[in-house]
Image (cartoon, rainbow over all chains, first blue to last red; front, side, top):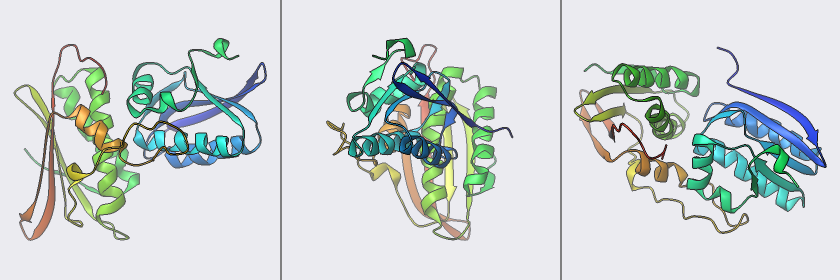
Length: 110
Length: 145
């Protein structure tokens, strides 16, 4: 079985973009947690790209919440963009959209 | 309707999911509602995988089928008695510091399944947790949750 989740990094304006491609579920959450925290350690203006994310469950949301909390403690910027369909709905249902700044697209990043 | 038995481990999660989604596909559940089913199924399957058997590896029995206008998933395990339906839901967080990690799963389940029942009792030679979850099929579901 091919990998269910992949990661890409890039930059846009002053932002370091961390793209999660594929699924963030009970199986892949640990890997997303590990790779996401490594990215967090070496960057300060982090924009998480969800435009190529297919699926996120409560296990995935817990990982995002932990990364967002750690960013705040470390006085780093952490925003999301590119959420649509089920990803957007899950973010809204969990209240995550009230805790973290969410932009529509990469172009909307300030 | 036969039960399909899986080792209750994370390595087997995608096999369990495939089994449920194949049954849903064959029953004519829409692609959109299959995503809802997946969200709900992940919550209950993960609970069993993570907590039912402690350090031991146990089994999880699953069956999934259409009955009238509902698609049902039933799960059975012989681990510690646990009724996930009594878990309290997460309150909507107001700020990042106080946001809790728990309680999201049950609030998703309540949104997805309009029929949920739990029973603990003897099943053959073992005592089992039995959970039955039903999702009403819809031509045009409002959303995923």
